[in-house]
Length: 245
Image (tube, rainbow, N blue to C red; front, side):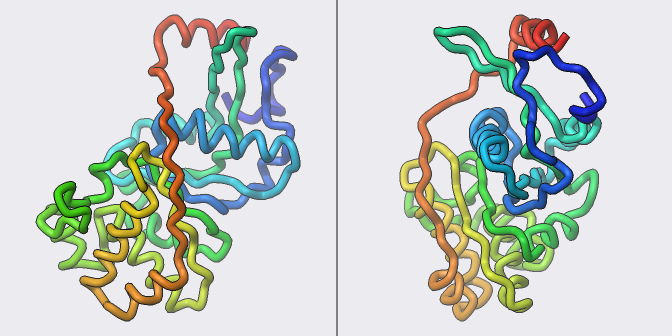
């Protein structure tokens, strides 16, 4: 899978009808898992097909996922979703993702700077409950978590999601840039409050003034969706191959 223009697809396969060259990283997403690929990225793709625009997605993975990111780059960031329904199945080539970064393939510095680009409006996350580094007993930042300990000692080279978000917001503030919206999409009750507690907890440890600015200017919407995306099977991969021809 390279560029859509370079191949002839069967008429029943849904492919991007918008100009992918116009996409910018307006959304930066943590966690390129199956749910995100078949939910947020797919819905962004549908909006782009309906009305165009430049709202592309940059995918971020930290210390794992390098093989998946390499595969994504080899496919020009295109991938396929198989939708199964009572009225039949649909094969959709998703084009909303146009860029990806990985700490192993690129660098942590490049990832943090991506969050600081002026056009970034949303940072979305599907990193599971563990990724927020919250103490489940208190709902507060778990300061005994090894990554949080690391981030408090070396805040400009963070390894945790809360640490990266705080460092990126700090840099945006210093550069006079509008802060991004932090959009947790994990299946966690009150997920907006969970990520807000994590970010404010980290910011308070670094600078109460910074924490106050984040509390006043950054939005943390609640977006819990109780859905799953079934894992790909040999059967589904064969079906996709047959559809694509």
